[in-house]
Image (cartoon, rainbow, N blue to C red; front, side, top):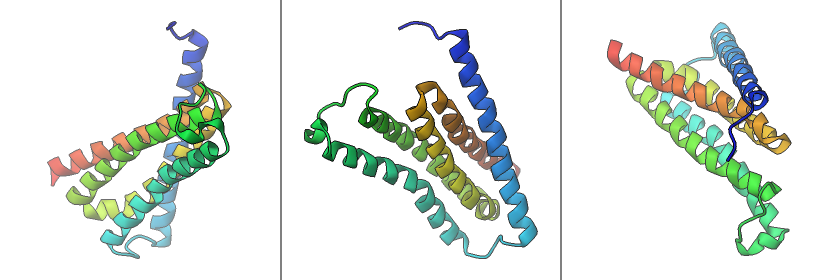
Length: 174
Protein backbone atom coordinates (compact mmCIF):
# COMPACT_ATOMS: atom_id res chain seq x y z
CA UNK A 1 0.00 0.00 0.00
CA UNK A 2 1.37 3.40 -0.94
CA UNK A 3 1.32 6.52 1.17
CA UNK A 4 -1.38 9.04 0.26
CA UNK A 5 -0.31 11.88 -1.98
CA UNK A 6 -0.47 15.50 -0.85
CA UNK A 7 -3.23 16.00 -3.42
CA UNK A 8 -5.28 13.15 -1.90
CA UNK A 9 -4.72 14.51 1.60
CA UNK A 10 -5.78 17.94 0.40
CA UNK A 11 -8.96 16.51 -1.13
CA UNK A 12 -9.86 14.78 2.13
CA UNK A 13 -9.00 17.83 4.26
CA UNK A 14 -11.14 20.01 2.00
CA UNK A 15 -13.96 17.48 2.38
CA UNK A 16 -13.69 17.64 6.16
CA UNK A 17 -13.80 21.44 6.18
CA UNK A 18 -16.84 21.41 3.87
CA UNK A 19 -18.49 18.90 6.22
CA UNK A 20 -17.90 21.13 9.22
CA UNK A 21 -19.41 24.08 7.40
CA UNK A 22 -22.45 22.14 6.15
CA UNK A 23 -23.00 20.51 9.56
CA UNK A 24 -22.81 23.81 11.40
CA UNK A 25 -25.15 25.56 8.96
CA UNK A 26 -27.72 22.73 8.92
CA UNK A 27 -27.74 21.84 12.61
CA UNK A 28 -27.28 25.39 13.91
CA UNK A 29 -29.67 26.89 11.36
CA UNK A 30 -32.35 24.29 11.98
CA UNK A 31 -32.03 24.66 15.74
CA UNK A 32 -32.35 28.44 15.46
CA UNK A 33 -35.32 28.19 13.09
CA UNK A 34 -37.15 25.60 15.21
CA UNK A 35 -36.54 27.67 18.33
CA UNK A 36 -37.78 30.85 16.61
CA UNK A 37 -40.94 29.10 15.40
CA UNK A 38 -41.56 27.50 18.79
CA UNK A 39 -41.48 23.97 17.39
CA UNK A 40 -39.67 22.41 20.33
CA UNK A 41 -41.69 20.43 22.88
CA UNK A 42 -44.43 19.72 20.34
CA UNK A 43 -44.12 15.98 21.00
CA UNK A 44 -42.93 13.96 23.97
CA UNK A 45 -39.27 13.18 24.49
CA UNK A 46 -39.95 9.44 24.11
CA UNK A 47 -41.50 10.04 20.69
CA UNK A 48 -38.60 12.30 19.80
CA UNK A 49 -36.19 9.49 20.57
CA UNK A 50 -38.25 7.04 18.52
CA UNK A 51 -38.29 9.44 15.58
CA UNK A 52 -34.53 9.92 15.97
CA UNK A 53 -33.94 6.18 15.68
CA UNK A 54 -36.30 5.75 12.76
CA UNK A 55 -34.97 8.65 10.70
CA UNK A 56 -31.31 7.79 11.18
CA UNK A 57 -31.97 4.10 10.43
CA UNK A 58 -33.34 4.93 6.98
CA UNK A 59 -29.72 5.31 5.87
CA UNK A 60 -29.05 1.64 6.68
CA UNK A 61 -32.34 0.43 5.22
CA UNK A 62 -31.56 2.23 1.95
CA UNK A 63 -28.14 0.61 1.70
CA UNK A 64 -29.40 -2.88 2.41
CA UNK A 65 -32.25 -2.47 -0.08
CA UNK A 66 -29.85 -1.24 -2.76
CA UNK A 67 -27.45 -4.12 -2.14
CA UNK A 68 -30.32 -6.61 -2.42
CA UNK A 69 -31.40 -5.03 -5.69
CA UNK A 70 -27.87 -5.04 -7.09
CA UNK A 71 -27.33 -8.69 -6.05
CA UNK A 72 -30.61 -9.79 -7.55
CA UNK A 73 -29.64 -8.52 -10.99
CA UNK A 74 -25.98 -9.59 -10.99
CA UNK A 75 -23.72 -12.62 -10.96
CA UNK A 76 -23.46 -12.05 -7.20
CA UNK A 77 -27.01 -13.25 -6.57
CA UNK A 78 -25.43 -16.27 -4.86
CA UNK A 79 -23.85 -14.05 -2.18
CA UNK A 80 -20.38 -14.14 -3.70
CA UNK A 81 -17.95 -11.29 -3.18
CA UNK A 82 -18.46 -8.53 -5.74
CA UNK A 83 -15.69 -7.15 -7.91
CA UNK A 84 -13.68 -4.44 -6.17
CA UNK A 85 -15.01 -0.99 -7.03
CA UNK A 86 -18.27 -2.31 -8.49
CA UNK A 87 -21.57 -0.66 -7.46
CA UNK A 88 -22.30 -3.63 -5.18
CA UNK A 89 -18.85 -3.42 -3.59
CA UNK A 90 -19.26 0.30 -2.92
CA UNK A 91 -22.75 -0.29 -1.52
CA UNK A 92 -21.42 -3.00 0.79
CA UNK A 93 -18.71 -0.62 2.00
CA UNK A 94 -21.39 2.03 2.55
CA UNK A 95 -23.43 -0.44 4.61
CA UNK A 96 -20.44 -1.41 6.76
CA UNK A 97 -19.54 2.19 7.49
CA UNK A 98 -23.18 3.10 8.09
CA UNK A 99 -23.53 0.32 10.68
CA UNK A 100 -20.48 1.70 12.49
CA UNK A 101 -21.70 5.29 12.27
CA UNK A 102 -25.28 4.40 13.25
CA UNK A 103 -24.10 2.50 16.32
CA UNK A 104 -22.07 5.48 17.47
CA UNK A 105 -24.90 7.91 16.72
CA UNK A 106 -27.45 5.83 18.65
CA UNK A 107 -25.10 5.48 21.62
CA UNK A 108 -24.41 9.22 21.64
CA UNK A 109 -28.12 9.97 21.32
CA UNK A 110 -28.92 7.57 24.17
CA UNK A 111 -26.31 9.20 26.35
CA UNK A 112 -27.67 12.67 25.69
CA UNK A 113 -31.26 11.48 26.10
CA UNK A 114 -30.54 10.08 29.56
CA UNK A 115 -28.38 12.87 30.96
CA UNK A 116 -30.13 15.85 29.34
CA UNK A 117 -33.58 14.91 28.01
CA UNK A 118 -34.61 18.54 27.50
CA UNK A 119 -31.62 19.23 25.24
CA UNK A 120 -32.04 15.86 23.51
CA UNK A 121 -35.68 16.63 22.76
CA UNK A 122 -34.64 19.77 20.87
CA UNK A 123 -31.45 18.53 19.24
CA UNK A 124 -31.88 14.86 18.33
CA UNK A 125 -34.56 15.23 15.62
CA UNK A 126 -32.39 17.76 13.81
CA UNK A 127 -29.29 15.63 14.22
CA UNK A 128 -31.06 12.52 12.95
CA UNK A 129 -32.14 14.29 9.77
CA UNK A 130 -28.58 15.57 9.36
CA UNK A 131 -27.28 12.02 9.95
CA UNK A 132 -29.44 10.77 7.08
CA UNK A 133 -28.33 13.60 4.77
CA UNK A 134 -24.67 13.07 5.71
CA UNK A 135 -24.90 9.34 5.01
CA UNK A 136 -26.32 10.13 1.58
CA UNK A 137 -23.44 12.56 0.99
CA UNK A 138 -21.04 9.76 1.94
CA UNK A 139 -22.68 7.29 -0.44
CA UNK A 140 -22.91 9.69 -3.38
CA UNK A 141 -19.36 10.89 -2.79
CA UNK A 142 -18.07 7.32 -2.64
CA UNK A 143 -19.80 6.49 -5.90
CA UNK A 144 -18.27 9.56 -7.57
CA UNK A 145 -14.72 8.93 -6.33
CA UNK A 146 -13.59 7.23 -3.10
CA UNK A 147 -11.87 10.35 -1.72
CA UNK A 148 -15.07 12.37 -2.09
CA UNK A 149 -16.68 10.27 0.63
CA UNK A 150 -14.76 12.40 3.15
CA UNK A 151 -17.49 15.06 3.21
CA UNK A 152 -20.18 12.56 4.17
CA UNK A 153 -17.94 10.69 6.59
CA UNK A 154 -16.94 13.83 8.49
CA UNK A 155 -20.49 15.22 8.33
CA UNK A 156 -21.66 12.03 10.06
CA UNK A 157 -18.80 11.35 12.46
CA UNK A 158 -18.00 14.79 13.85
CA UNK A 159 -21.59 15.73 14.82
CA UNK A 160 -21.86 12.32 16.48
CA UNK A 161 -18.71 13.05 18.49
CA UNK A 162 -20.33 16.37 19.39
CA UNK A 163 -23.26 14.38 20.88
CA UNK A 164 -20.83 12.41 23.05
CA UNK A 165 -19.09 15.58 24.16
CA UNK A 166 -22.37 17.34 24.92
CA UNK A 167 -23.65 14.33 26.87
CA UNK A 168 -20.40 14.13 28.86
CA UNK A 169 -20.51 17.85 29.56
CA UNK A 170 -24.14 17.67 30.72
CA UNK A 171 -23.32 14.70 32.93
CA UNK A 172 -20.51 16.64 34.59
CA UNK A 173 -22.38 19.92 35.12
CA UNK A 174 -25.75 18.52 36.22
